[in-house]
Image (cartoon, rainbow over all chains, first blue to last red; front, side, top):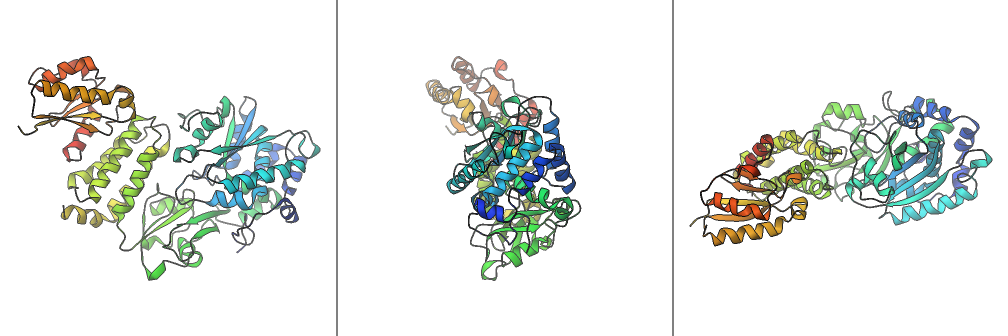
Length: 416
Length: 109
């Protein structure tokens, strides 16, 4: 199937500068530099590109806000922290298509008028960092970034920053803290990075995959891009189908928004191994609500997922097999969030630790009905508290599991 | 005598940085010195009131003492021995107290 990022399906193998240029690489940049930054923002807005890091904010709007912020200088930050469990879409792009990502970062920088772009990459991704570093040297020698990009009047510096690999280090404002040499802790918002970002200056933080979509959009146009996906959500997304042995063909698949979830699981992934049946699907990372198996025809699209009761997030699809205990899953999830809470907000520490402790008790058959009621109370009490969204993340999986699979909890209480 | 009261001393990062470990040990010693065999001291993971730590919750009596310092321990032990409630250390918001007391009532600790 034709894709936007991977024209012939997701394939492993690093694409060098020569190969990238042979398929139109950096032509979008040449074209853009002949026009205005505003024109770049316009095409990206017309295409309807949304952030692919999870929040889905319109990219054109983010760039416009950054460009219109009065302070100088401005910065672009490519967020390749990728600490979402099960996600490796950004790594696949950075390792295999480094020039596509770099061209996207240069285009984004030009659009907002950035003097410098920081490429923030998970420190564990050694191959990706080397791949991007080599590509940066090639691209600089060819004049695609540095002093006087392509002989024009635009100057852009680029630097790679290795990202610590804890969960909050991928949160937009925690990314800025790390680049400033501080601990990875989210900032209180507002102000948002588009007005007060890196070193207090306007900054656009964009996910790797978002930036990788920009060169094809500028080269082939907004209408071409809108030929993929749905009216509300054009384009494609790289979906990470759970990296366990549960699925016949786990991996990363680029699919247009709106593709039924069933297609990803059955056609791409080959279904579950050993003829196992699906109990539940978590369509968008550990912070999304479980969907029952009968929602398998839900389109992979943010609005449809919301209507079905969950969310698409950054496209990490996880499957629970019939016979698997939802409580075991939730112990893993609640312990993950408790461990990853950065520690600066008291409410988040108390909530995430309490949820994990309660879930562990239930798993150990030491639970009671009153304990089950505490999950909702803790979540409701802490709603809206904390600097970042981590405090809300354990909510959807826990509450959906209690609703969909009460018998999994009751069975453990009954034998207490 | 069987244990009838437990002093839960928060041992999360913030309370620890304010000396909660030493505080728990001192409290234990003072309780023993007073001969209160029905009172126990246990660590707790977090009450969600980090800025007001160190925090000590007396359960099941449900008294929450915040900003506890070494010099406050004699008054707390006196209270545990039947003396007056230490009003100056009772500063926690009632909604947070209610949430935590309900949680403790489930028998989770």
